[in-house]
Image 1: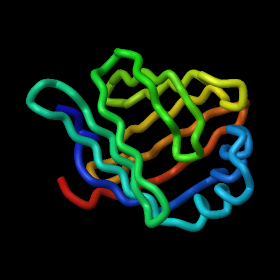
Image 2 (image 1 turned 30 degrees about the vertical axis):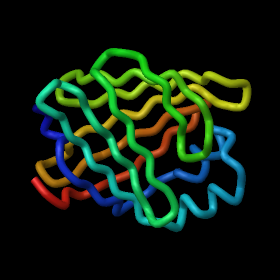
Image 3 (image 1 turned 90 degrees about the horizontal axis):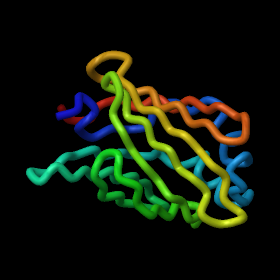
Length: 138
């Protein structure tokens, strides 16, 4: 069981718009993404499959996957990716490989800074973004 399991609420963005630009997200979706409060739910079921649910008032995405096994992902902006998630030293590392010409490779690292705070580091096209989330449930 990962210490990241639980429900999380976004409380701070740093450089998120620049990251979205680097990912070829259009201006309308960027404006919306920068205004909404995002929630993440991370769970593991009894079969060892994981769920990562990202939701806001605008969108909801649900990823079901096994660690270290590549799967198809469609990002909230509609880009198609080949994604792999692994856990290293209690950090979730999500590698997104572009699966279409308009998409851009990306990496998201999620880690706890304390029991109730998760720092997500987003990287694409030489741009780095930090998103801070607080735990809603334990």
